[in-house]
Every structure is written in C-alpha cells, then in structure tokens.
Length: 261
Image (cartoon, rainbow, N blue to C red):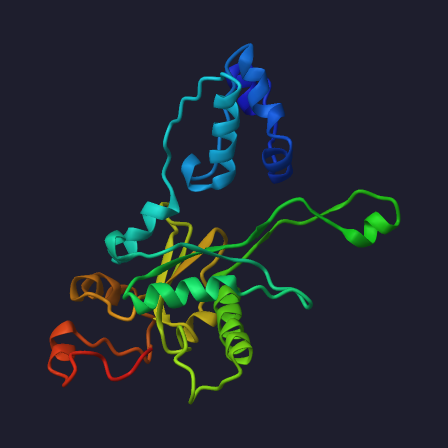
C-alpha cells in the first residue's frame, strides 16, 4: 500500500505460481504501457525470469533489465574467490517420502575439480495446507526458510543415500564430501547483522545463524592460502578443522592431500 501511494500506480504481489504459470499476466500488458517486475537478487540468475524475457521478446515487447545485488556475487565476502566456484546447487526441503539428491553429483563434480559449491537453500512461501483443502478451505501455511543447520543435516543424509544407491560403504566409495569437509554458512549478507561462520559440515548443524535468508558453501578439495587468510576469521570457535597450505601439500610424495575431506 505504501509503495502504491508513493508511486501512484497499482502494485500486484507476484508469487511463484504467477511468475511460473501465469507469466503472460505480467508481460502482455507491456504491449500497451510500461510494466516493472521487481525481483529478489539479479533477474538473470533464475531461469524463470529468462523464460519470461524470451516470451516477451517473441511477441514484440521490448525488455529492459536493471541488474541487482545477488548472493551469486555477495558470497565472495566469505573470502572464497568467485573464480573458484563450480556449478551452483539448490537444496530442497526433504519430506518423509521425497528426498531428491540430484545436487550430490554436482557437488561431487565440483569438488573433484577443486571447485567450491554455492548451495541455495529452499524457501516455501504460500505453501497450501492440504488438510484444510480436504475440508474445502484454501489456507496457506506460514513461510518456511531453510536454515544452514537443516541444509547441513540433509547434506549428511544425502551422503548416506548416495552410498546406499551405489551399493557401497565408506571403505569402498570415495564420497563427494564428508562430515569433516570445510563449509561456510552465511545469513543475511549485506545487512548489519549478517552472520558468516566456517567449520566442518558436521559443526554447522549446530551453529545459530539467526533469521533468514541463509545460504552455504561446500568448499573445494583445495582451499587457496589467500582464501584461508580471510576465512580463518570466520572459523567456528573450537572447530576441529585444520587447514593444510598448498606449500605443505606440495611436500607430500604425490603433491596431493593424503586425506579427502
């Protein structure tokens, strides 16, 4: 209401359903006048927005893009160099009967190449209450924002699922990561109360990061010395993680770390 009063124009809250399934309600009115879609983060970081741009241009609508701050770049404040990141993954909320782990293979691919993995954590907004729907009522559940704690727990669970799928165990498999892998959790980046904590994957399951929004990084198998110079200031107090410099690794017989964490 305040924004409508300020701009003197009507504003529609475009939820996920509208943007994904009713996009024409957003871009078709632009044939007759200007339409602005305000999004969280950078508009081209989401394939949904890219699809809308293509569809608008296909019907002759001019599209102007104004870039915005995004977690894709802001995560660099952890000390991890953006050049060293691989594919970004999304971690969805697990349910009792639905535990997809397609992200596991991407993390595995990244880490084998020495690359970090940015994990975008699930957000549930306007999630229908199915019990209420069965009674003929339309009720939405309160918003849910995945925490670093939940993501860390699910990543550990995904590791066990991956082992079962491969039909192996810790002795026969080289896992994509372990509970001792160095990770970084970040919350509310860019705000005065932002929180960044580094530690092992297991340790991040118990760190209090505060309110949303959260994201996390699974570090690559080799963290650069300069990255560590920044990251060590975020290391959880009492963390069991021990950094091995590139110089120390080079002194090993095969030039590699003896332990895959």
